[in-house]
Image 1: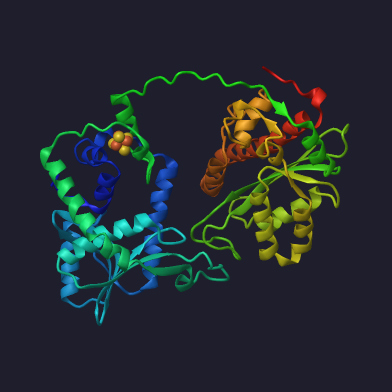
Image 2 (image 1 turned 135 degrees about the vertical axis):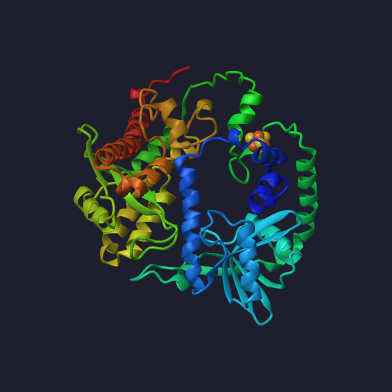
Length: 458
Ligand code: SF4
């Protein structure tokens, strides 16, 4: 049994032969799945089931088995024999390799294969996946005509009921699949040889451990060969200012000054009306307001309720928090501007308001990107996560439960499924995270807008 490969173990072998070996012989050493990885896996499974409706009325070769296996292969053969038009999880074995394809469709000129992916297009790794499946299907004697990736269509907009025919789009990858047949055969020979040999390959950790996907044996490999402790590099935290450029940047701004930041969430299958696959949906913002240089800073925030379309409520909250004049500072303008333009498109009744917000945006990243504020300790980056510890060391994300946007997005998507107490705590964590994003801007602004407040460290 251990010599049998599958599409995923084949792809493990392509990433790193040691990963394939560990998967087959030392699977207990795998890192535990984290919640976000599980969600990605579940998303793929859910999308596969949904996509079956693109070709409704088929038979399922996997039946009640947890995974497609030998029994599914037997059922597939029987379904083909009886002339079924559409087979889900059609399973084939050839050259000690077992693969299942999501949807197999019989045509008058052979079979078309549809492999479902929860992405907005066909990617190069999908072609490699497809090449392995095609190799096995052909080897098992199936007359394959075309090979497609069935992925989300990013142009689809949810209006009313979910339209499966509009949500998915089929991209023909047959040419790429055919070009990779020798590559599949060569790799299979190598991988079968490795498994027959039965010795753990001596491969050092490197770039392959995260490409194209993070390897799930990183814990094991780093225990085996603990990385050399990195020599501590002490970066020079001196901050250099180009005061003329900063003065000219500031002279364009007008009070009240607003410091603004969105958090967003994405769903492959749109859950809100007037939204598309993987559209970034703003669900939260934080806003600090400084009326004039000596004024007390005020803070406003919005966080959507789970299960409720967040965007229109968010726009109403913005209208009550942002006045008609003054500059709106963001960090990395193209992100906030992009979301505001999408809101204006999807809620045209608020487009005038959103358009005037866009016109008032200014990007606080510019002085850092342009090098008007520079420090070796920024590490060559103008990300707020790199700039903040140098500019305002007393302010830190380290104490927060949520420390970056990806986690904020993930926990928001889970909020509706949490028990009440956890939901309340998580809402507080989300608010604290987003608040710090704009507070960080405020503190950085204070430092660069008044050089006498500026403590240059060396
Ligand atoms: S952690 Fe890296 S070296 Fe170890 S098996 Fe995975 S990819 Fe290979």
